[in-house]
Image (cartoon, rainbow, N blue to C red; front, side, top):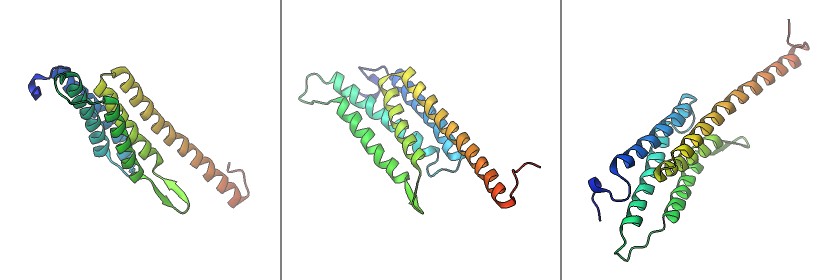
Length: 168
């Protein structure tokens, strides 16, 4: 089996680049979540993306270089296992209070970061970057829309309290 410095399937410099890019993408999403005081800060996002990327890199290296052994590895099964496991982590971010479920965006975004880590691990750079941009855009747009909806609710409450239209 090749050592760490002599990877056979993916050059070491590219494997390192993939791990660093997955960490950078996750830091962007994690920072947005941390800035908004959400249940998970940037650390789990980064660790999930890096771990997913590393799992893919490792299994690909083994699957595509160990031709003479009895070892049979299906990278698709490993990827499915990684993403399924991250789903349990995301489920831990969900909580219920007063009949409402909270933490859905955090749970979904941690799962997406696992998928982004997988995409970077596979070398699908454009797809991983696009998914990161879409995830960040969705989180930012969702916050914007929630804030707008909250402002409209506040104006409606003011109308109900004063009996006026809210304009002076």
